[in-house]
Image 1 (tube, rainbow, N blue to C red):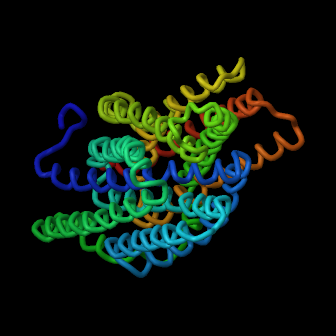
Image 2: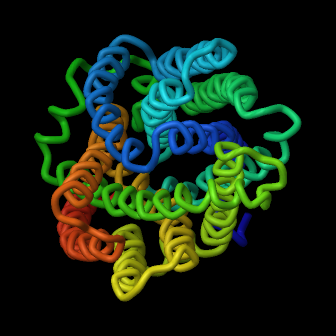
Length: 439
């Protein structure tokens, strides 16, 4: 483990349990993600895909409130269990609906909204759990190890999809994902009991670190209130919003090209017998595989070293500068090859270094903020970036005659504000760390 991060005696079992858990969560998600792309792009197209982000963001307002309500009534292990079981039951319902005569477009819209909630809610509650287990010092060392599971799971999921889509079919991926998520519940309970037992053995340490408290439900109060109450959290919220706008706008640019080319390839007989939606699914599975391979390399060999050399605060700026260079290139003249590799570089860094950095920012926050405020930021504010992107896509395509280069230029403009927010977060992080030297 020394090759990837510093792991002290006794820390490895819990770190491996958490790594396996997040690995399986992302494997399940990446089995469903190509299904999402196939259904929405083949059924409705890239513009509708962009506009649906608004529906996801509105849904997340109610999801965050419901999650905060549940977090105030159930201990962490039960909270995670019930939330995950809800998503598993939804997958079973979606599979049953796929056997009916429901139109492809309708199925794609509903599934797109659902998975937009899933892919931020389930990882957010996992990382809240991980933040709750580790101290700030341990988290900075061990989060790069745990996050290897997320990166490797993304690569595994997209690769497994490519193997299974032809023999099993598109919709059967939902059932496979549901079974994987059930295993994640078991791993959560094993981790919880292991940490609880360790705390009970070290009674004095338990009292000092709040180990007993970690088994109790949280205090009453919503996640949004916590975010708007504290500058540090509010800066993170808008940092995440712009991050996701830039990423989503790039996805729209790529989706436009893929949607245009897929019917031509199928008509020319170059799709290996796949229809349009299956070909799009396979294209995205391959794209995700490259993204996740890059993310895996960065997570394994670079993230822990970046944290060690320039810290969490310095790591905030790596992705914004990569995105700034990539979209500046696109404004100069675009091709599918260029867009694809800009997105691979951007997404690969986002899913590894930036993903770990975002979670590490909460190591210095309270338990309330780790679960509730983090969930609000990782869900609503994350998806608010999608809404902003869909608004710009609508205005750009309907009234402003934006081409791909102009969409990329708008990204460049916002990335400058993104970097400024990073500076504000770094200042607040430094101040809070000084106020609590143990962090």
